[in-house]
Structure formats: structure tokens, C-alpha cells
Image (cartoon, rainbow, N blue to C red; front, side, top):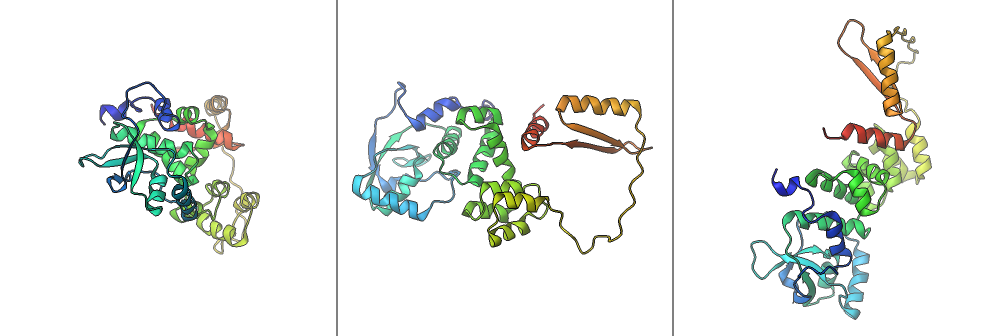
Length: 296
């Protein structure tokens, strides 16, 4: 891993965000300029993958009447003299093509690949232009590629840590369910309720078909599903194994440390066993995930 990825943000998360929100710092910059539209190209690492056609058409109509008010942020396109790559403003670039503009107002910035990707993710998240899956993927990229923690992202982006943690869990859903979220057939609330289900794809179809609310979905997920291969005869209860004093003490220590009930079931005569941790709220689950994911 190179030094740039190790150090995380090249100029600091807040500095990059201010570049997008209000580029008013006093550092020397190239002035606002106009460049031919065919000399501007999209960023291949842009986290946003879907653009609403109706919204683009509305923006294109506005651009035809008023022009582009806010310049795009671009950088010189690597390996192509006289061409530029979009850092922030791809939606305006697409709408400008629909409006048949010949040139675009741009602000040219000298940014490396790391800063370009970070800015692209942050710009979309900051302006609420991403669907929940794209937003979650943006958070994951910032964490995996640049070493940002949930706490750091929450503070810098003005989001709660639980919001970021809940969205990241959506990335564990099957692709079919994530596609429903991307298209808007399922809300982020529906998807969060499905994260703990083993039949999330099947349940997603039922939610869409029946128009179930998030609360109905939560009840549906908690309801046990009958299986035709289930044994109709109730199984006899397992005989409780008496735990020694050391095991009980360890359970108490872990319970106190995590603030969640911890149970240890050691297999008699073996080196293996099970540790069960029970949580009573999603906040407790978030905290458990944070503790388990801390890099040593």
C-alpha cells in the first residue's frame, strides 16, 4: 500500500468538502474558464451509477434557459493533453449534453487519483444525490481505500454513526434485493429489516407485491417460516450442562465489558464451544459491530 493510501485524505476531509461546497479558500487556483463540452469526460470511478431521466430533463430545460450557473470542478485528464476529467458535476455535464451546449464553465483543480475519488464520493453524499446502496458503497470505499472510520465519516459528513452503520449493513443483502433498493421499489427501511433474514430475496418480492410498510416488514421478518421438512415432533429439551465457576466468571466479565448478555457453552471433553451475545436494540448491534471490526 502506498504512502498516499496509508495517510488517508491528502488534504483533510474537511478541506476537500469545502472545495465542493464553497471553494473560497485563499490558496492559488486556476480561474473559472470555459472549455468545449467534447473535451470534458466523466470520472470512471464515479460512485453514482444511476441518473434519473426526468430530473436530468428538468435540469436540461433549466440550462437551456439560464445556462450552467455553478461551474463543474475538473482536473486535467491523465494522459490526454487539453482534455479534462470531471471531479464534481457529472449530472450538470450530462444535462448540458441534452441541452446541446457547446462549452462548459469549469474550475480546474490539480488533484491526484485519491483526492478525485474522495471528492466524487463526498460531493454526492453531501448533496443527497445517491440512492441508499450507492451511498453505502461510497462509505465503504472511503473506509476500505482510505482507512476512514465510521466515527470520522459521521463527524465530517454531518451524519450519525448509526446512519452510516445501518447503510453499510445493506451491502450484505443479495444483489436482487439491492437492485430493488436502487430502483426505489424498496426503501432503506425495508432493506434494513431484511438484513437479518435468510430469505430476504423471497420476502422482498412479497413486500413489493403486497405493498407492505416497514413496520409490517419487521413483523414479517420476525415471524418464523414453516418448512415442509420440519420435524413435526417436538424435540426433547437439551439437558443443561453445569458450568464451572471460571466459565460463569468469564461470562460475567464479558457481559459487563460489552453491556450485553454473553453466554458461553463449552463442549464437555473438547476444546470447542459457542459464545452467544444477545443485543436488545439496533444501537447495541451497531456498538457490537464497531467493537468486532476495530483493527488491531
